[in-house]
Image (cartoon, rainbow, N blue to C red; front, top):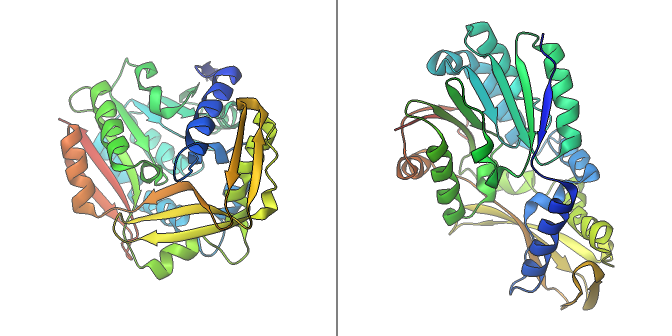
Length: 323
């Protein structure tokens, strides 16, 4: 068994610089917004893991069962030697895929990528123990600008699971999918997990649970700004809002100021005014139709899609070949 390794392309000062830039741009925009990646400090990651276990939050368990049912088919269809996972987190669901691909006999290396060094340190150690035949090589980076660092030396499949593609607006999605296609060789593959358009009566509660865990998670982005930029957000004076945008077919999460207030952010030299009832967007989670995401993949340079969906057609796994 080879020892797991970790490659770091995102130093703490780079991460802080990125947060400063995003906060400055987002908080001076009209309307205000913040990128969802800043939810995930240690507390935010804990809250999200709690969200995935909530009765209302169906995406994680639906994708897990889809992987359980289709992992052997995926392993046979790809015969990849290297599995690269973008935004791997704890790699919990991916263990189903790793098990099937190692049993198939072709997989030699697993390369999990995540922005969190702590998450990867924990995951690569556990996975190396669980899958002793694999070389496990973690990469700490931002998935949107890490693709040029991906390993070669064997047939690769890139996995991007969890519906995270839906956090990108259409232009960002097009650019991101095209950039994945650019780094893959002909015949290499992308495994994509996406949420599907379904009944808003089911979708909205998944992002606005009765226990209020998602509300805590949403407000955690303000705690991150307080901690990292010395801001003085009164977190409890912001209300969690989740709604279904029928035109764009996405869930939108926002934070709404309960009253007029001024917030100071010394870390970026900014004072921000919020009006009473003013809303700030913190996340979109686009949902897809199988035909629509197929067209997006085709435009990006992929073809020969194989699709697996759950019986309720709320989630899809798509295996796409690089043209």
